[in-house]
Length: 426
Image 1 (cartoon, rainbow, N blue to C red):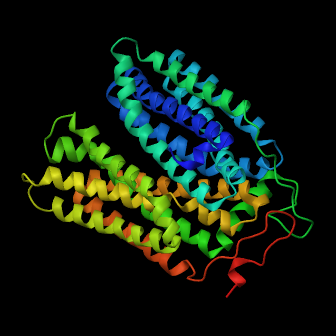
Image 2 (cartoon, helix red, strand yellow):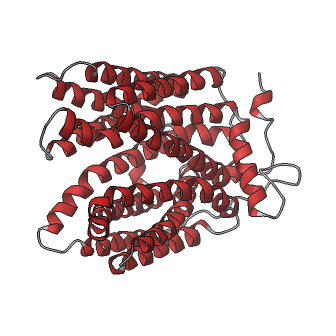
Image 3 (cartoon, rainbow, N blue to C red):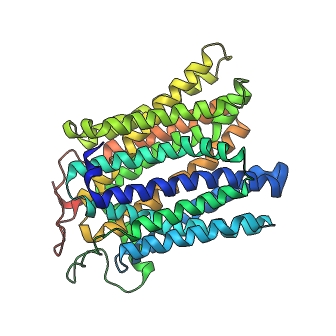
C-alpha cells in the first residue's frame, strides 16, 4: 500500500474520488445508450454536442468558481457539488427530448467544473510533504485510468440484468458516496488572504478574480510551460479517443471487441507510468521528466501517420497497440507531476484560483484538438490527421522546453507574503 494512504484524511478523499469516478464511468455508458434511444442514427451528433458542452462548461465556469473557492469552506463546496451532480443524473432517465439532455449535461458539468479544481487544490493542503503529494498525484492518475477501464466492464455486467437507466442510479450512488466520505472528513479551511497589495486579486467581483487567476498562471514561466504540455497531451489524446474506433473497425477491419483492447493499451501505459513516477521523480527533475515525455508524443503520432500511409498488414494491430501504449505512458508522465509544479509556483492562498485557471485552460486545449482531429480524419483521412496532430504536439513540446526555466523554482510562502514574480527571478 502506498504510504500516503496511511494518512486518514487523504485516504477518505481518495476513496471519494474513486467512487465518484466509477459513477462517472457508468454515466458515460448510460448516456451513450440514452442518446441512441432519443436520436437513433444521429446519436453521435448528440454525444458530440454533449462533449462540446462539457468542455465549454469547464473552460468558462472553472475560473469563476475558482475565484470564489477561497471564500467557501472546501468541505461545504465539495459536498454540495456532489449532491448537485447526484440530483442531475437521477433526472436523466426521465428526459424525452434531446434539448433536455443538453440542459442537464450543462448543469452536471458546471458542478464538476466547481468540484474538480477545488478537490485538486485541497490535496496539497492535506499533504504538505512533497513525497506524499507526489504519491497522491500518481494515485489520482491511476484512479482516472482505472475508471476508463473498469467502469465499462462494470456497466456491461450490470446491463446483463438491469435496464440501462439503472446505470444513472449507480452514478448517483457514486456521487452520494463521495459526498458522505467528504462530509465525514475534517478538511483545512481556506487559506487567509495576503495583506493588501499581494495575492491574486482583492477586487470584489468573481469575473475580476477569475481573470486574475488566469493572469497568475500566465505570468509564471513554469505554469506557461504546463499549458504548452497540456496542448501536446491534448493533441495526442484526442487522436486516441477520436480515431481508435475508426482505426480498429474500419482501417484494420477488426471486431468491435478489439476497440476496448486498443483503449486498454492506452490506459495500461498510463497506469504503469503513474505507478513508477514517485520513484522516478524522487531522483529526477520535473522539467526533465515532463519535457522528455512530451517529445515522445509527437514521435508516437508520427509513427502512426507513417504506418497509416502504407497498406495494413499482420504487423498493423500490434503496432497500433504499441503506439497507444507509448502514448498513454508519455501522457501520464507529462500530466501527473503537474500539480507539483503548480504548488511550487503559486502561494498556498492562491491555489484554488490557480488550479481552476489551469483546469480551464487545459480543457481549452482539448476543445481545440477534439474537433481538429474529427474534421481532419473525416476530410483528409486518419494518416493526415495523425500527421497534423503530431505537428501540434511537437509545437507544444518545443514551447514547453523553451518556456520552462532551467533554474530550480523558489517555493512561495504559505501565508501572508507574496513572493517576487517568477518572471523576475534569474
